[in-house]
Amino acid sequence: MRRVILFLASGAYVGYIPVASGTWGTLLAFPLFWIFEPWRHLSVGLYLAGFLATVLGACWIAGRAEAILQEHDSHAIVIDEIVGYLAATLFLAPTWEHTLVAFVVFRVFDVIKPFPAGYFDRAVRGGAGVVLDDVVSGIYANLATRALMAIAG
Image (cartoon, rainbow, N blue to C red; front, side, top):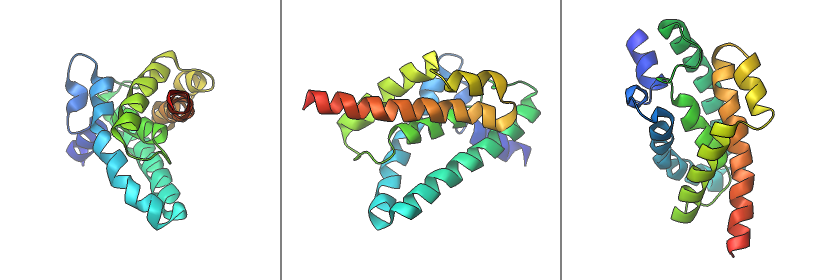
């Protein structure tokens, strides 16, 4: 079970890349953005339930990985970036423009951690603290992506 947890939490061991592991982890989410798309058209409820189940699963996995690694929000854990990027692309059409703009904007928000993302990162322990700051950053990135795409025309 330990290997499965670390495999999932590290994004198939991408989290162990010594430089920019969070960025590499975010890149892993690109195919998930495109895979989730048919769910949106099938049922908005199913789409949201799938996203929420992914967030809850990521919280559990990140919490278990923290316990195994004995480190809060270890750089090896990138499942939070994966889920954060899914939040950044929630209800967006899977175009290459959305894919790339959401990626850049999400990475910026993930680094600066605007309120309440920074609060979750600092004050909430366990897997929820690891994941929820990225989900909040993803929501901000989603809104910013929409605004930037509207401005671009």
